Image (cartoon, rainbow over all chains, first blue to last red; front, side, top):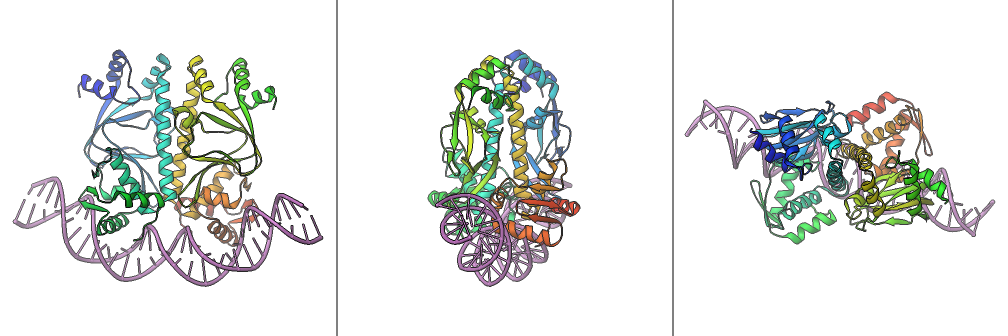
Length: 231
Length: 231
DNA sequence: ATTATTTTTTGATTTAAGTCAAGGAAGGTT
DNA sequence: AACCTTCCTTGACTTAAATCAAAAAATAAT
């Protein structure tokens, strides 16, 4: 990857938006690129967090593993998004695992560089603050969904969320497999399959592969809000 | 509450530790105090976050409400601890409810004051960064416990956590009711009661009111790690 | 102390969702 | 095309935990 391309990528990271060209060029000179095959691990729970990552292509999953090997996916990270900043910032170890779920490329930004940036531009910390509080809100939502609702409610909320982030689109396309979706919602593929099947048979949605078309938004909202839906 | 007392309280808040006396005095001149009865609401989900709070006495619970009124407690806040900074910082609305669970007193610190502080001392933002990433780690843990483990595992982990925060003490005392504990662990009082009963009958712990004595730490750790325990 | 209120325990029952098992569908590879 | 994975669906069964109901215990109030 050329330096110019790297600058283009990092200039769009929320953390780095608004930085002067000279600083961006400096960063671009230090970051290293990594090519990853499908299924390749980037780091594991407990590893030293000596820097953080930006996805330039592909898709990375961040997940925890129970002692039996059952995984709970915390989130997926796609192009332009970053991961690993929080433990990097506090100098801790990574609290979760990261793995590419398809052929991907990531940039690695070392901690030392980051510390220097803060020294040079104190308001740089402000942007970081904003990012962290966004993350907190996201976790807040995750906790709410995992504990307040039953699986159909979580699934309905997730479909509406995807639709909403596209301005109320009637048709959405999953960027992940249904198995991954299951883990993201804290359940298993079989359960997701059954609920999607039931919702289809009741003409609430229409499912074709990874495409989901919303036929009855009202009902979907009810399921999401009340959490009640009988299989 | 006298100004001197207020200064003493806020000087111990992680966010304000290390600030010069003049700034502390200035803050103390602006904060307002609130006395709360048991069960009194401080703010509700959706309210404008025009500032944040510090508990000076009593206990406050932060919780979400499902549409049926079932509550999931996110955390409890005791003397010296703060709540509401995250939405205050990002200028959002409160994402949860706050309510005193006993007679309490809280200080209110307005957003405007906070913004001025950042302007005057950019490194003030650094302390905030550190605090936020600690919160994130905490949420991380909560998500893990809610989704990776069954209820006995969560309870075992919670008991060990309380013991651990007391340097491995064999006897711990709950600062909350068992009903609140249930909600905190994403379950109901009956289930907590049954699990504690079973653990007692197997001499893993001994329960007397809100006191819990650990008799068999090894087994407790196994339940926490494997998540397996049969009632 | 006696009443009232909140908290905790116990038992019977229901239910959502997990497990196990096995067949299909889809996608990629040679 | 035929092959091989990986992904998805369906069915029968099991189980952890929620719900419902009611009594006992502990706290607080008068």
